[in-house]
Length: 79
Image (cartoon, rainbow, N blue to C red; front, side, top):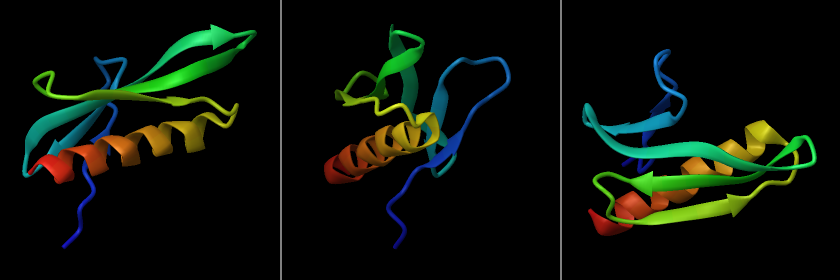
């Protein structure tokens, strides 16, 4: 069974939204700057069940993906 959330960036939102079986269950967003780079990526399970963050490395795509994977893992460890 695939234990990854489906991630979408809705046009009206500034956060990636993780879906499972059609329900919004998580969010991922960038937070803070170090120089001109994102400092960290934060994630949160909805509704406010658990939070976490990933230190940014400068590769925004990979950093966002790491945060999404961490949120997915946290979600499926609880369900």
